[in-house]
Image (cartoon, rainbow, N blue to C red; front, top):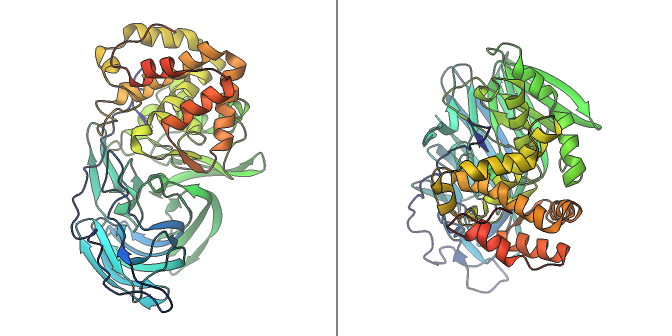
Length: 480
């Protein structure tokens, strides 16, 4: 993610308020065990226990895939949806939760059998007809409908599913997915996605991954997309409206870019046209591009004042494209997230610097490569001028207000942490650390502690003092 001030400052996107849930962890066996198993069936937890957002996500199962079919009419702002979720139980499960905000649930079936369900705030509690044995694979079919609602984002406007003049945008971090489909809404439970979006003829409906074609009938067009690499739920996106779409290939993979028709042709078009070039530059430093598609979307909704690294298809606010340098800078930042944040995702939200510090450093690398200020000078300039707040917030544990109070730290100080590491171990070892990190953690999740251990293993050096000062200290570290 990146906020409006790309050059020397960072975004401020508010974290979603932790939602209170009730009656979800009582351990009761409301349906008993299935035939042929013993007792001990319990309800899954209403939250994964994230240190910052304990109510996000759910326990008791891992999602394998989402198959989403939604129909949206901008004229009425009404969404109807069908979600088929394939998951695997991680305990003997009598009941489980899905995150879903606002929308009304019409029916729930588990393995083709009607299941009892109820709502507790933003939780959908599902009780299957029989318990689900630990290790068993099961499917959940949910039919739902309503007028999706956005959530507030301090400083940068709305997040979640946002109605626009010509359609809608679904975008946000850390919470957005649950505003438009039932989900285990935490990055620790990544899954593959197929997404079909039906909209009135004449509108474009964009999403993640590779395009799978369109079909039209009775005044409606269905756009199909597939993201076959595991994806964190907050990276799932839908963008509906009037867009000029460019579909090409790059390195044999589809590249789909789109820019709002209401924006004049210019900087945004030129910046997105360089997506493949920028991805190739980053691949030389970080290893092969991790997904099967490239792309990007520029909307024209001023109430959404940030860019987000939605998997294989980042979504950008128009305010970033005031000039070519700024435009390609934000593209470099969000494309870098395809390695760091998307392919290698955080295990807990407190590890967010692994996303933003890495993307910030990649942006500095691109600036230097494209004829701008060398990385060393960019880092020294920020180090010398940064306000005290950046040094008082440790990027390795910035707190739940990570995009507001912690923003300067996780972006700028996070990036400087990487430069301090580069200075300590040398260029060859530094880029070997980044490439092997991206390779070994591909399609998975990671923690700060794991990155530190990885850097020490690859470099053959103890780096405790460096990371203690740059990631966890609350005073300004010595210049690297």
